[in-house]
Length: 407
Image (cartoon, rainbow, N blue to C red):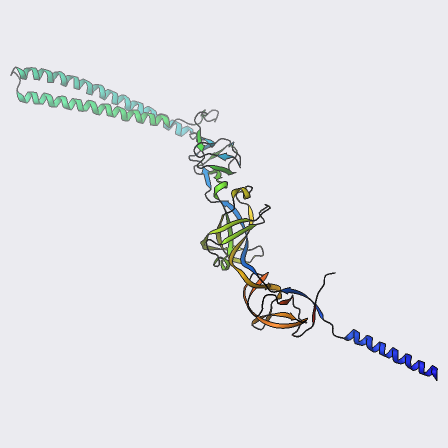
Protein backbone atom coordinates (compact mmCIF):
# COMPACT_ATOMS: atom_id res chain seq x y z
CA UNK A 1 0.00 0.00 0.00
CA UNK A 2 2.82 2.34 0.85
CA UNK A 3 4.62 1.38 -2.37
CA UNK A 4 1.54 2.29 -4.46
CA UNK A 5 1.23 5.64 -2.69
CA UNK A 6 4.93 6.39 -3.36
CA UNK A 7 4.48 5.64 -7.05
CA UNK A 8 1.49 8.05 -7.23
CA UNK A 9 3.48 10.83 -5.62
CA UNK A 10 6.34 10.28 -8.08
CA UNK A 11 4.02 10.39 -11.09
CA UNK A 12 2.31 13.56 -9.87
CA UNK A 13 5.65 15.23 -9.24
CA UNK A 14 6.94 14.29 -12.66
CA UNK A 15 3.77 15.62 -14.29
CA UNK A 16 4.06 18.91 -12.43
CA UNK A 17 7.70 19.29 -13.48
CA UNK A 18 6.86 18.59 -17.14
CA UNK A 19 3.97 21.06 -17.09
CA UNK A 20 6.15 23.69 -15.43
CA UNK A 21 8.90 23.17 -18.00
CA UNK A 22 6.47 23.47 -20.87
CA UNK A 23 4.91 26.59 -19.34
CA UNK A 24 8.35 28.13 -18.93
CA UNK A 25 9.34 27.26 -22.47
CA UNK A 26 6.24 28.72 -24.10
CA UNK A 27 5.65 31.62 -21.72
CA UNK A 28 5.86 35.01 -23.63
CA UNK A 29 9.18 36.73 -22.98
CA UNK A 30 10.10 40.42 -23.44
CA UNK A 31 11.61 41.25 -26.85
CA UNK A 32 15.20 42.43 -26.77
CA UNK A 33 15.52 45.77 -28.55
CA UNK A 34 17.99 48.62 -28.99
CA UNK A 35 16.88 51.77 -27.20
CA UNK A 36 17.64 55.44 -27.52
CA UNK A 37 16.49 58.66 -25.94
CA UNK A 38 14.87 61.83 -27.24
CA UNK A 39 17.22 64.69 -26.36
CA UNK A 40 17.50 68.44 -26.66
CA UNK A 41 20.49 69.44 -28.74
CA UNK A 42 21.88 71.05 -31.87
CA UNK A 43 21.11 69.76 -35.32
CA UNK A 44 22.09 70.71 -38.85
CA UNK A 45 21.23 69.56 -42.36
CA UNK A 46 24.08 69.43 -44.86
CA UNK A 47 24.57 68.70 -48.55
CA UNK A 48 27.61 66.46 -48.96
CA UNK A 49 29.59 66.39 -52.20
CA UNK A 50 33.08 65.97 -53.57
CA UNK A 51 34.86 69.05 -54.88
CA UNK A 52 38.24 70.24 -56.05
CA UNK A 53 40.44 73.24 -55.39
CA UNK A 54 41.45 75.77 -58.01
CA UNK A 55 43.13 79.14 -58.29
CA UNK A 56 40.43 81.69 -59.04
CA UNK A 57 42.57 83.90 -61.29
CA UNK A 58 44.92 81.54 -63.07
CA UNK A 59 47.04 83.09 -65.83
CA UNK A 60 47.84 81.05 -68.91
CA UNK A 61 51.06 82.35 -70.47
CA UNK A 62 51.07 81.94 -74.27
CA UNK A 63 53.58 82.74 -77.01
CA UNK A 64 53.16 86.38 -78.10
CA UNK A 65 54.56 85.73 -81.59
CA UNK A 66 55.23 82.76 -83.78
CA UNK A 67 58.73 81.52 -83.10
CA UNK A 68 60.96 79.02 -81.39
CA UNK A 69 60.52 78.51 -77.65
CA UNK A 70 63.80 77.83 -75.87
CA UNK A 71 63.80 75.15 -73.17
CA UNK A 72 61.76 76.31 -70.17
CA UNK A 73 63.86 76.37 -67.00
CA UNK A 74 61.19 77.06 -64.38
CA UNK A 75 59.45 74.14 -62.67
CA UNK A 76 55.94 73.71 -61.21
CA UNK A 77 55.96 75.17 -57.71
CA UNK A 78 58.59 77.84 -58.41
CA UNK A 79 57.66 81.31 -57.08
CA UNK A 80 57.55 84.17 -59.61
CA UNK A 81 57.29 87.96 -59.36
CA UNK A 82 55.12 90.05 -61.64
CA UNK A 83 57.13 91.74 -64.38
CA UNK A 84 60.48 90.57 -62.96
CA UNK A 85 60.85 86.80 -63.20
CA UNK A 86 61.75 85.62 -66.71
CA UNK A 87 59.75 82.42 -67.14
CA UNK A 88 60.63 81.63 -70.77
CA UNK A 89 62.53 82.91 -73.78
CA UNK A 90 61.58 82.87 -77.45
CA UNK A 91 63.28 83.50 -80.76
CA UNK A 92 61.17 85.04 -83.54
CA UNK A 93 60.34 82.67 -86.33
CA UNK A 94 63.00 82.36 -89.06
CA UNK A 95 62.03 83.46 -92.58
CA UNK A 96 60.58 80.82 -94.84
CA UNK A 97 62.86 78.86 -97.16
CA UNK A 98 62.90 80.21 -100.72
CA UNK A 99 62.51 77.92 -103.70
CA UNK A 100 64.34 78.56 -106.99
CA UNK A 101 61.49 80.37 -108.70
CA UNK A 102 60.76 82.60 -105.71
CA UNK A 103 64.45 83.44 -105.33
CA UNK A 104 64.78 84.35 -109.03
CA UNK A 105 61.66 86.50 -108.78
CA UNK A 106 63.10 88.23 -105.74
CA UNK A 107 66.43 88.81 -107.54
CA UNK A 108 64.58 90.28 -110.52
CA UNK A 109 62.67 92.58 -108.18
CA UNK A 110 65.95 93.77 -106.65
CA UNK A 111 67.41 94.46 -110.11
CA UNK A 112 64.31 96.38 -111.13
CA UNK A 113 64.35 98.39 -107.91
CA UNK A 114 68.02 99.26 -108.39
CA UNK A 115 67.36 100.42 -111.96
CA UNK A 116 64.40 102.51 -110.82
CA UNK A 117 66.57 104.06 -108.11
CA UNK A 118 69.22 104.99 -110.71
CA UNK A 119 66.52 106.64 -112.84
CA UNK A 120 65.31 108.58 -109.79
CA UNK A 121 68.84 109.76 -109.02
CA UNK A 122 69.26 110.87 -112.64
CA UNK A 123 66.00 112.79 -112.35
CA UNK A 124 67.35 114.38 -109.19
CA UNK A 125 70.53 115.48 -110.98
CA UNK A 126 68.46 117.03 -113.75
CA UNK A 127 66.20 118.77 -111.24
CA UNK A 128 69.26 120.06 -109.37
CA UNK A 129 70.74 121.46 -112.60
CA UNK A 130 67.43 123.10 -113.53
CA UNK A 131 67.24 124.65 -110.07
CA UNK A 132 70.77 126.05 -110.33
CA UNK A 133 69.98 127.54 -113.74
CA UNK A 134 66.73 129.06 -112.48
CA UNK A 135 68.56 130.52 -109.49
CA UNK A 136 71.19 132.24 -111.69
CA UNK A 137 68.48 133.50 -114.04
CA UNK A 138 66.50 134.92 -111.11
CA UNK A 139 69.58 136.70 -109.74
CA UNK A 140 70.34 138.32 -113.13
CA UNK A 141 66.72 139.38 -113.61
CA UNK A 142 66.62 140.99 -110.17
CA UNK A 143 69.81 142.94 -110.91
CA UNK A 144 68.41 144.15 -114.22
CA UNK A 145 65.08 145.01 -112.64
CA UNK A 146 66.89 147.08 -110.03
CA UNK A 147 68.45 149.16 -112.91
CA UNK A 148 65.05 149.36 -114.68
CA UNK A 149 66.52 147.35 -117.54
CA UNK A 150 64.23 144.28 -117.09
CA UNK A 151 60.48 144.56 -116.90
CA UNK A 152 58.33 143.50 -114.00
CA UNK A 153 56.88 140.66 -116.10
CA UNK A 154 60.34 139.26 -116.78
CA UNK A 155 61.07 139.24 -113.06
CA UNK A 156 57.80 137.41 -112.35
CA UNK A 157 58.63 134.78 -114.95
CA UNK A 158 62.10 134.25 -113.45
CA UNK A 159 60.66 133.82 -109.94
CA UNK A 160 58.04 131.35 -111.24
CA UNK A 161 60.74 129.34 -113.03
CA UNK A 162 62.79 129.23 -109.80
CA UNK A 163 59.85 127.96 -107.72
CA UNK A 164 59.04 125.34 -110.36
CA UNK A 165 62.63 124.09 -110.44
CA UNK A 166 62.78 124.01 -106.62
CA UNK A 167 59.57 121.95 -106.42
CA UNK A 168 60.89 119.56 -109.08
CA UNK A 169 64.09 119.09 -107.06
CA UNK A 170 62.08 118.33 -103.86
CA UNK A 171 59.88 115.87 -105.79
CA UNK A 172 62.96 114.10 -107.17
CA UNK A 173 64.41 113.74 -103.65
CA UNK A 174 61.10 112.27 -102.39
CA UNK A 175 61.02 109.82 -105.31
CA UNK A 176 64.53 108.64 -104.37
CA UNK A 177 63.30 107.91 -100.83
CA UNK A 178 60.45 105.83 -102.25
CA UNK A 179 62.78 103.95 -104.62
CA UNK A 180 65.25 103.21 -101.83
CA UNK A 181 62.43 101.77 -99.69
CA UNK A 182 61.30 99.61 -102.62
CA UNK A 183 64.85 98.34 -103.04
CA UNK A 184 65.09 97.47 -99.33
CA UNK A 185 61.77 95.64 -99.54
CA UNK A 186 62.94 93.66 -102.57
CA UNK A 187 66.19 92.73 -100.83
CA UNK A 188 64.27 91.66 -97.70
CA UNK A 189 62.45 89.02 -99.76
CA UNK A 190 65.79 87.32 -100.29
CA UNK A 191 66.32 86.82 -96.53
CA UNK A 192 65.65 83.18 -95.59
CA UNK A 193 67.18 79.81 -94.74
CA UNK A 194 70.52 79.07 -96.26
CA UNK A 195 69.65 77.04 -99.34
CA UNK A 196 72.78 74.93 -98.98
CA UNK A 197 72.71 73.88 -95.32
CA UNK A 198 69.05 74.48 -94.53
CA UNK A 199 70.00 76.12 -91.22
CA UNK A 200 68.48 79.30 -89.88
CA UNK A 201 70.66 82.40 -89.53
CA UNK A 202 72.24 82.89 -86.12
CA UNK A 203 69.83 84.80 -83.86
CA UNK A 204 71.13 83.89 -80.39
CA UNK A 205 71.04 87.49 -79.28
CA UNK A 206 67.51 88.11 -80.64
CA UNK A 207 65.59 86.24 -77.94
CA UNK A 208 62.35 87.70 -76.57
CA UNK A 209 62.04 87.28 -72.75
CA UNK A 210 58.63 86.42 -71.33
CA UNK A 211 58.08 87.71 -67.79
CA UNK A 212 55.53 86.55 -65.22
CA UNK A 213 52.13 88.31 -65.64
CA UNK A 214 51.40 88.04 -61.90
CA UNK A 215 53.04 87.27 -58.59
CA UNK A 216 52.43 83.70 -57.52
CA UNK A 217 53.51 80.16 -58.28
CA UNK A 218 54.02 78.18 -61.45
CA UNK A 219 51.11 75.72 -61.44
CA UNK A 220 52.06 73.65 -64.46
CA UNK A 221 54.38 73.81 -67.45
CA UNK A 222 52.58 72.88 -70.67
CA UNK A 223 55.52 73.25 -73.06
CA UNK A 224 58.80 72.20 -71.42
CA UNK A 225 61.13 71.29 -74.27
CA UNK A 226 62.47 73.57 -76.98
CA UNK A 227 60.00 73.67 -79.85
CA UNK A 228 58.48 75.88 -82.53
CA UNK A 229 55.15 77.43 -81.55
CA UNK A 230 52.44 79.37 -83.32
CA UNK A 231 51.33 82.68 -81.86
CA UNK A 232 48.94 82.16 -78.94
CA UNK A 233 50.10 78.62 -78.02
CA UNK A 234 49.87 77.94 -74.26
CA UNK A 235 53.23 77.59 -72.50
CA UNK A 236 52.47 77.46 -68.77
CA UNK A 237 49.92 78.36 -66.09
CA UNK A 238 50.62 80.68 -63.14
CA UNK A 239 48.46 81.45 -60.11
CA UNK A 240 48.56 82.64 -56.50
CA UNK A 241 47.86 79.63 -54.28
CA UNK A 242 48.38 81.58 -51.04
CA UNK A 243 45.59 84.13 -51.48
CA UNK A 244 43.51 83.02 -54.47
CA UNK A 245 42.62 79.38 -53.76
CA UNK A 246 38.97 78.32 -53.73
CA UNK A 247 36.87 75.16 -53.90
CA UNK A 248 34.51 74.25 -56.73
CA UNK A 249 31.79 71.67 -56.11
CA UNK A 250 29.34 70.26 -58.64
CA UNK A 251 25.90 70.06 -56.98
CA UNK A 252 22.77 68.35 -58.19
CA UNK A 253 20.41 71.04 -59.40
CA UNK A 254 17.84 69.89 -56.82
CA UNK A 255 20.44 70.52 -54.09
CA UNK A 256 21.73 73.75 -55.60
CA UNK A 257 18.38 75.51 -55.12
CA UNK A 258 18.78 75.00 -51.35
CA UNK A 259 22.23 76.62 -51.22
CA UNK A 260 22.68 80.36 -50.73
CA UNK A 261 25.79 82.58 -50.75
CA UNK A 262 27.14 82.89 -47.22
CA UNK A 263 26.17 79.36 -46.12
CA UNK A 264 28.74 77.74 -43.86
CA UNK A 265 30.86 74.96 -45.39
CA UNK A 266 32.88 72.26 -43.63
CA UNK A 267 35.77 70.91 -45.73
CA UNK A 268 36.89 67.40 -44.78
CA UNK A 269 38.94 64.46 -46.09
CA UNK A 270 41.44 66.73 -47.84
CA UNK A 271 44.45 64.97 -46.33
CA UNK A 272 45.05 67.22 -43.33
CA UNK A 273 44.46 66.43 -39.67
CA UNK A 274 41.78 69.06 -39.10
CA UNK A 275 38.54 70.26 -40.62
CA UNK A 276 38.71 73.43 -42.70
CA UNK A 277 36.05 76.11 -42.78
CA UNK A 278 34.61 78.05 -45.69
CA UNK A 279 31.54 79.87 -46.97
CA UNK A 280 29.61 79.64 -50.22
CA UNK A 281 30.76 82.51 -52.42
CA UNK A 282 28.32 82.00 -55.29
CA UNK A 283 26.12 79.46 -57.03
CA UNK A 284 26.40 79.67 -60.79
CA UNK A 285 23.10 80.18 -62.65
CA UNK A 286 23.95 77.78 -65.49
CA UNK A 287 23.37 74.03 -65.20
CA UNK A 288 24.79 71.29 -67.39
CA UNK A 289 24.30 67.59 -67.99
CA UNK A 290 26.75 65.13 -66.50
CA UNK A 291 26.71 61.33 -66.37
CA UNK A 292 27.42 59.59 -63.09
CA UNK A 293 29.73 56.59 -62.74
CA UNK A 294 26.64 54.39 -63.13
CA UNK A 295 25.66 56.10 -66.37
CA UNK A 296 22.79 58.09 -64.85
CA UNK A 297 22.12 61.45 -66.50
CA UNK A 298 22.23 64.27 -63.92
CA UNK A 299 21.84 68.03 -64.04
CA UNK A 300 24.73 69.63 -62.17
CA UNK A 301 25.41 73.21 -61.05
CA UNK A 302 28.77 74.58 -59.94
CA UNK A 303 29.08 76.29 -56.56
CA UNK A 304 32.21 78.22 -55.56
CA UNK A 305 33.41 78.08 -51.94
CA UNK A 306 35.78 80.57 -50.34
CA UNK A 307 38.13 79.48 -47.55
CA UNK A 308 37.78 81.18 -44.17
CA UNK A 309 40.36 79.04 -42.35
CA UNK A 310 43.85 80.56 -42.00
CA UNK A 311 46.31 79.80 -44.76
CA UNK A 312 48.61 78.07 -42.26
CA UNK A 313 46.02 75.32 -41.73
CA UNK A 314 45.85 74.46 -45.46
CA UNK A 315 49.35 75.28 -46.68
CA UNK A 316 49.70 71.85 -48.32
CA UNK A 317 46.65 72.33 -50.54
CA UNK A 318 47.32 73.17 -54.17
CA UNK A 319 45.51 73.66 -57.45
CA UNK A 320 43.23 70.77 -58.52
CA UNK A 321 43.24 68.85 -55.19
CA UNK A 322 40.25 66.67 -54.19
CA UNK A 323 38.23 67.58 -51.08
CA UNK A 324 34.88 66.66 -49.55
CA UNK A 325 32.53 69.43 -48.49
CA UNK A 326 29.46 69.67 -46.28
CA UNK A 327 27.32 72.71 -47.00
CA UNK A 328 25.09 73.62 -44.05
CA UNK A 329 21.67 74.55 -45.46
CA UNK A 330 19.80 74.45 -42.12
CA UNK A 331 20.74 74.39 -38.43
CA UNK A 332 19.01 74.81 -35.08
CA UNK A 333 20.02 74.88 -31.41
CA UNK A 334 18.00 73.54 -28.47
CA UNK A 335 15.65 71.44 -30.57
CA UNK A 336 14.19 68.01 -29.77
CA UNK A 337 15.97 65.31 -31.78
CA UNK A 338 15.85 61.52 -32.04
CA UNK A 339 17.92 59.07 -34.09
CA UNK A 340 16.52 58.76 -37.61
CA UNK A 341 16.58 54.97 -37.36
CA UNK A 342 13.80 55.11 -34.75
CA UNK A 343 11.22 56.41 -37.25
CA UNK A 344 8.89 54.28 -39.34
CA UNK A 345 5.87 54.92 -41.49
CA UNK A 346 2.32 54.48 -40.26
CA UNK A 347 0.28 55.20 -43.35
CA UNK A 348 1.06 58.80 -44.28
CA UNK A 349 2.35 59.63 -40.81
CA UNK A 350 5.62 59.06 -38.99
CA UNK A 351 5.67 57.05 -35.78
CA UNK A 352 8.04 55.69 -33.13
CA UNK A 353 7.80 53.09 -30.38
CA UNK A 354 7.99 54.86 -27.03
CA UNK A 355 8.94 52.62 -24.10
CA UNK A 356 7.02 52.99 -20.83
CA UNK A 357 7.23 50.41 -18.01
CA UNK A 358 9.08 48.03 -20.34
CA UNK A 359 6.18 48.17 -22.81
CA UNK A 360 6.34 49.51 -26.37
CA UNK A 361 3.71 52.10 -27.25
CA UNK A 362 3.29 53.14 -30.88
CA UNK A 363 3.30 56.96 -30.93
CA UNK A 364 2.64 59.27 -33.89
CA UNK A 365 5.13 62.12 -34.19
CA UNK A 366 5.51 65.23 -36.32
CA UNK A 367 8.92 65.31 -37.98
CA UNK A 368 10.70 68.50 -39.01
CA UNK A 369 14.14 68.26 -40.58
CA UNK A 370 15.96 64.97 -41.09
CA UNK A 371 19.64 64.70 -42.00
CA UNK A 372 19.73 60.90 -42.15
CA UNK A 373 21.32 60.57 -38.71
CA UNK A 374 19.06 62.67 -36.51
CA UNK A 375 15.50 63.87 -36.96
CA UNK A 376 13.83 66.94 -35.52
CA UNK A 377 10.61 66.15 -33.59
CA UNK A 378 8.07 68.95 -33.55
CA UNK A 379 5.30 67.11 -31.69
CA UNK A 380 4.58 63.72 -30.09
CA UNK A 381 7.57 63.24 -27.77
CA UNK A 382 9.27 64.94 -24.86
CA UNK A 383 12.89 65.20 -23.90
CA UNK A 384 14.03 62.08 -22.01
CA UNK A 385 11.49 59.70 -23.59
CA UNK A 386 12.95 56.28 -24.35
CA UNK A 387 12.36 55.01 -27.87
CA UNK A 388 13.16 51.83 -29.77
CA UNK A 389 15.83 51.95 -32.46
CA UNK A 390 15.56 49.85 -35.61
CA UNK A 391 11.98 48.68 -34.88
CA UNK A 392 11.29 45.29 -36.44
CA UNK A 393 8.12 44.14 -38.15
CA UNK A 394 7.35 41.85 -35.19
CA UNK A 395 6.90 44.72 -32.75
CA UNK A 396 3.42 45.92 -31.97
CA UNK A 397 1.68 48.29 -29.64
CA UNK A 398 1.83 46.84 -26.10
CA UNK A 399 4.72 44.47 -26.75
CA UNK A 400 6.89 43.82 -23.69
CA UNK A 401 10.49 44.79 -24.39
CA UNK A 402 13.83 44.73 -22.68
CA UNK A 403 17.04 46.56 -23.49
CA UNK A 404 19.45 44.46 -25.51
CA UNK A 405 22.80 44.01 -23.83
CA UNK A 406 26.04 43.61 -25.71
CA UNK A 407 27.98 40.57 -24.54
